Length: 187
Image (tube, rainbow, N blue to C red; front, side, top):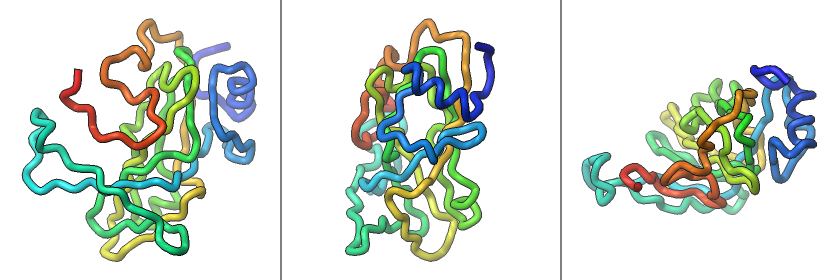
């Protein structure tokens, strides 16, 4: 196995061999060179009442729950930052890394979907963890998001193997099953 981007058949093989865990897995989400992820139903809006000092966790924004409306949609208002989990829990072996981006369909609606972009080797391994998405609308109108829809693509790359996988790093998000606030400043 070489080093590089995994193609569709390699993604399926990585799942079969336990190098990549995706739960729930839907084969229709396998793209030519990525695995699509779907929007989970839980969401939080970031709210701050004072200037944020990144060195002072007491000033960090609060996570305020955003419940789905009567039609099951998540509201995203102009200027808001919405944190939402992927529907899928993902685990990467120490030999895999990922790059996560929003889909072009969302971008063409003025909606940015990001994470920190990088999913480190060993993330969520072996049981899987959600990926927390940061969703921002560039529109002047409210947008309604639909949980369960494809919202991002996780490009997977084979690497030589991390000596210190992400799951062993301090203050990591590798076991998250729900959206968590920033751990910036945590040891």
